[in-house]
Length: 585
Image: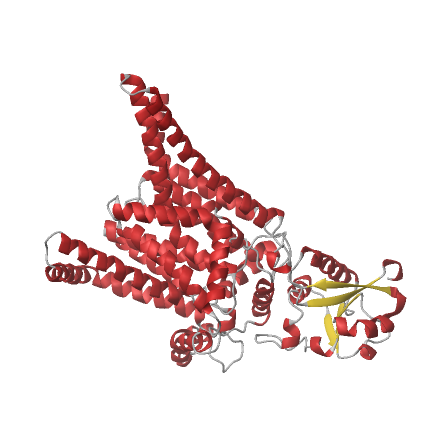
């Protein structure tokens, strides 16, 4: 422990970078946890969350690509069992991942300057896109986060030659594989970026007068020697990776004869080959058939690209500009660090590649580009910071020796002030956008004619739907075993007792996100095809379509009040909800 103020200042000066990173992560965690459950569930959140609840109830699961990886199924089933199922707990894991992500900046401490490490942590903490989708139960932020951590641990394994980092990287990569099929795009991006870095290395060798052949030969010798040294650990890492994948992707089934992980390891070892096959090759084939073999990517590219660029402009303009500055400076004026170049290529590839892979134009795919570009952007912050600092230093030198005229001192002050204003403007702009989209107006997308931000997806359920949720909650609390919610209309009819596992009917999807709430509330739900089947004692909440509104109103009479609700902000999905009047209950 430091015994004097001087000792404490020396200790602080030596450790200010990790302390700054930790403080930034703490602030990022608070930003993500604050009012986390306030926003009504978005479409995808609702139906994925619903299937997590059904898995908890029936214990049946198998991989279906439309639901993406089993990450939420495994993790949120534990969270729901311990803390209950709410909007807050459903988003909790993603919020924690996003909040702790700034800590990953410390993994690059041997490749980045001190100010760049802190800048990287800060970018990961406050970028509006990363903040907004850290408060969302979607797989994209966890995938990007785990891939950044995997990259950092891989760099640490190379820099320190410590096997523990290799195993840490394997765990991060294995979990990334459980989030979303887009992990394959990340690996392709890594491969392409690595080839470009290697090509630049070959050009530099030629410029220095050495032969590329001798360079490749030397590299091969080192690779073979490294493989021999690390062979045992590489085998262990591969086994660990497949254990993670098998645990997450292996089917679960309460049926006696159906293959299931716990039955296979609990005594029915004859099931083990089938379980492993379904978790590995079977899952891979399903993913490729669904996402690459179908018609999902059969759309015009340019509109999707423009949508991606516009979202980046609204949510990560500063990151993109600073990444360009950092990349160009490092490449042409600095030491051309492999990490900076590699990350910049990955960010560019994600920007131009995801519009081709996406099934619809979505803002959350930009998360992958922002995370990759954050490293060269941090370098860009360092460039501006050091430039401004150098101007101040030159101004102070001019004061001390008196050899520089006042006009030159003034120009130095203006340049330093300009650097400060530039960074300050980017920070303030990013902060204001983050506050607007995550807290003040997390519903409104400009696609529905509103004044919102492109960060907000148009399929977000509006805040007014909370009225329906409150009414269902009250009906379930006071209705005993009677029906609480009745759906009316052929397009909404679904067998309420048959949905133990996906897929569901089109009629059920037309109800989303309401089924998540009826399930968490414990409401009794049923449905009928026509208004004449409602019965003599209708439940407190009756839900139908606009086409059936008149028939249902005539059947229910004056005891009910009806209102039309949008199920997304763009308004292309609506339901009409009849509430029993309070004085008639």
